[in-house]
Picture 1 (cartoon, rainbow, N blue to C red):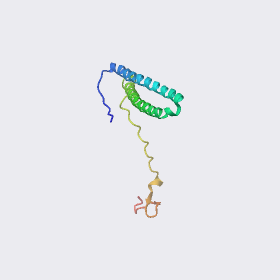
Picture 2: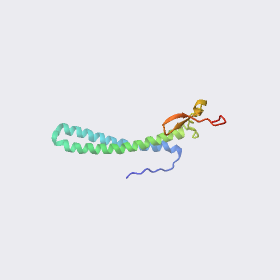
Picture 3: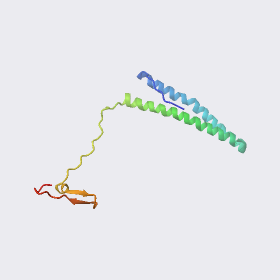
Length: 132
């Protein structure tokens, strides 16, 4: 199981940390490229006899690439946070847009109501004083 951890560091150390995380992926990537090249050569020379070994090697390569991708995703996340917080900070008090207000009822609409029994709009009954 993998967990994410965080720790505090000085702002001027962040780019060095990002650089180190990036460098940490270079050697494993080169080794995986070498292994993939070897698989290709072995398949070319040994044919069917090399298929099972090549299959297992490619599986191992793909799993290692997934681990490297996780490191690069974390690194990119650090860079995104650095950009938002340090390089291009935006105000945090941005208010979401307010929904448009509902139009007020016209005089005709205020004289109508929904009748659940007939499932239709009906005119409101007028009271004795001529009010609704």
